[in-house]
Length: 172
Image (cartoon, rainbow, N blue to C red):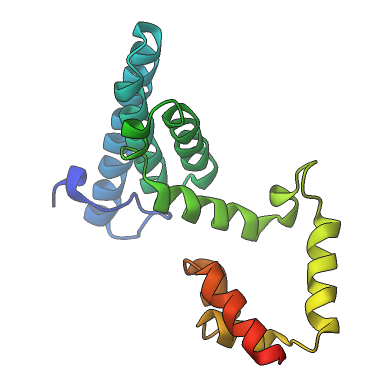
């Protein structure tokens, strides 16, 4: 198959020679694409073409994800999102779902990733204790969110208003 059409580079080398060479070709192709997109991003930034810069950064994030480099993908999507706040037209070019997914993957590896000066982890513990103090259990919150398990809870796009409404109804 065409390495350009392969969804992602293999994470491990295969014993089969043909599969191994195809994986190496795919990895090399994606690295070349990534280098080209980084160059396009820098060129667009230097010329003040924010639309081209956002497009290049978003595509670089996708290519990084094809290489299983979640940190690099997250950085590219985040930079594109930061630039896109300058114009509502640019926001459409950002892949918000991949940005959220990369954020979730990074947060799953390190809870401190979500820590900021504005919202320390102690506040998350306070929210947890408040929910437990009101009689809510993990199963109740999962059911209210429409999630079957904690992984589903983390990876689904939560409807905050629906969750709040269901928790309020169950607390009465």
